[in-house]
Image (cartoon, rainbow over all chains, first blue to last red):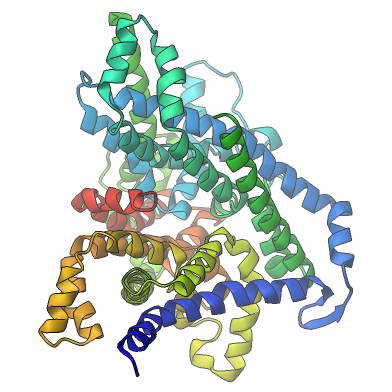
Length: 290
Length: 273
């Protein structure tokens, strides 16, 4: 055997375990999920129904609610969080700022909590008789306790605030490290030309950080489309289905209601389609604005 | 100019306060009895020991900790081995065919876990009949699907680009085999990469919720996130005790963060380099 042949085989040996495991636990299940999505029935008692499940998606009010909720989270939360993270990172990148390390560590701290742990804390903090209402009542900001968990509008707000709390610092770190690579002289020149802080932000910072903003908005979008832990532990999807997400609906279809694995697999393909769609959309949007 | 400064400190101060407050509240509440927590007490109390005692006696938190630790350690060990072997292989033994395979593997990052849970559950339910030791309700079932991730392979490959290839040649001249070069030269030189990867993997395993929720069924097998989630949904919660449990669950990751902040951030940023 030639030396080249041997090194080629050695190379494949190094990657073999990873390739096998990813095929077995990612790609094979995706094929299985597609086969399942063409079937219907209770538990393991399945029969072929063709594309019937896909038609059912469009008339299933629970599915439409779950998609709508997920979109509300996506459209409100992702832009708010990214803007907030950008502003914080620009402020923290200021040379003259004191206590920089303290601010940075504090704002990043939420990232060390597990999703379940912080969700339970938020659930208690935002309970109707919880500390947030107590605080607002004592400050006379509100006259009646707000139903942060029990009202269908405020429950969505609570979920959005929770996710923003957990992930803003995470995104901020990406922007901070990118900002450190920007030449200071650009800002100095802009200052001499009389540019305001807001103008510097929109005309220098944002364009230069575009690749990293794109990266964080794609990961945030993918994360939000898969939202599960928070909703499960803060509101259980309630009141009614007011905060239920697509992931949670798949979980409910498979493990809480009478199991309908075929239809659950169909709904799961809907998430895959949405993720691919949004990723392409964001790539396109970033490309066109050049 | 001064107004701008004041606004900046105010903005950052509020952001820092909002970020820290839930932690403070959690720590303070873990030292208070449940009644005081509901009243909104924000001062430390003397009830920490009672809360701990209740936790150990009423809920088997020790067992949950042991389960989580065992799962996280085994997952981290195996994931680092498999991921670094692959990252090394894809970069050092680069070929067109391997690059194609690598790009296909990257596609798996786009697959949401929600799309995998039904077929994975059915796979392990089927295994429960054929090979019960790795079927539903076993630690192996929690660990197996999380060993290989495209992210770790990508992370190791990116970092391998900085590994000096002369070291490989030197190893070959010294008569080391290909695996020997990997184990004796690559692994020791890439310590910091391994540290960052270990932190990411350990944390995501320690905090994993959805898959253990589906695959673990008996109480004795429950991990920490499942236990916290159960406590959080109880009808008459003992707030002091639950907060103590959450403090214990958060402690390992917070510790890792404070002790290894550099590696932690390096690991995070490593994904975009």
